[in-house]
Amino acid sequence: MLDVNDKKALQVKSEDYFILAECFFDHAFSRPEYLFNQRGKSAGTAHLQRNLIKFNPILFTQNKQEFIDQVVPHEVAHIIAYQQYGKVKPHGKEWQHIMKHVFHRPATTTHTLDIKDVMGKQYRYQCLCDTHLLTIRRHNNILKGTKYICKKCGEVLYQTTK
Ligand SMILES: [Zn+2]
Ligand SMILES: [Zn+2]
Image 1 (cartoon, helix red, strand yellow):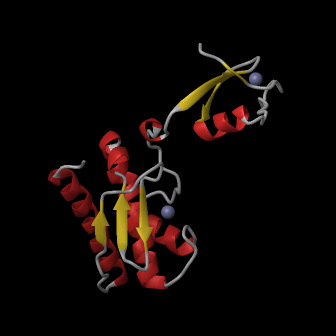
Image 2 (cartoon, rainbow, N blue to C red; image 1 turned 45 degrees about the vertical axis):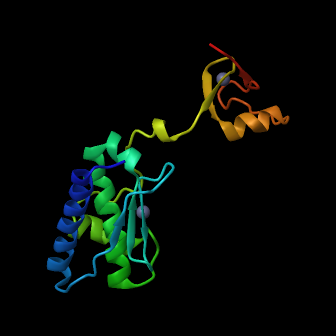
């Protein structure tokens, strides 16, 4: 789904962060393999033991700049943290240190990506005060008898076509 230039852009940006890390820590880090088949709502995942980063091609296509600015350093920082410190908490102080002081990026764990195209079908429900978009999982629960209540008005949600 991604063309060769997109893949190259992600790898070149990742490489920039590896070089920053090598300057900071003054030794070499082993480069991961890059795959472009991450599915679902995750923008990317770092597989530490396998030394592998997976990027989400759909989210990348829709959010290229945010991806380059946020997702690439986030995932590379996981790989660096593992190689530098071993098994540590995923977004713990080592990872945060790398984000802030090595990469000069904010150490935020959530991305501001537009994920509506990977959310799957949504079902429109209504209460007294608002409309609510529910996932297929919740919609199926309702068909089986579960009742969801609006936190604001306290009313049971019912399906609407509006
Ligand atoms: Zn993470
Ligand atoms: Zn309500």
